Length: 185
Image: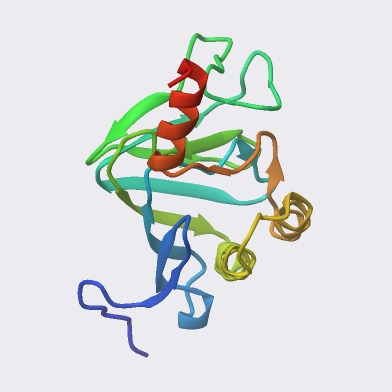
């Protein structure tokens, strides 16, 4: 029996306009845990969601993400950014070296609100839910044009993902132009 050794930057990569995912260890390798390196571009918001059976671990390697992992006092359907737990917890700014563990049944989310990409190590148990999820979301993003929210919702349901707030990807150029439009510039 042999283990798996990957040099830096190696592994099967899926690249979309919204994420870059490199598969590090998967069910195909005999792993019960799916392990990925994920580059999260500025403007990407995975949306708050919950898994019934899966558990996840996120470790920030570079950059920063806003992260949340708790049941809020009130779930709102459009944004998780201002959620608060009964204990007063709020989303936090996670920088290099920060981590987040998410047990099954816990609402969680992350977004890159900065102007630089963030890079994280992401683990999900059990394998292969997220392996297949990333493959299908890459196909949806690759189709071009507007992302079909219904297709994303159906795909997520197949992989133990119950979406609470929408997935969003607004690159900084779009954020700046929409902000300028609101200011009347």
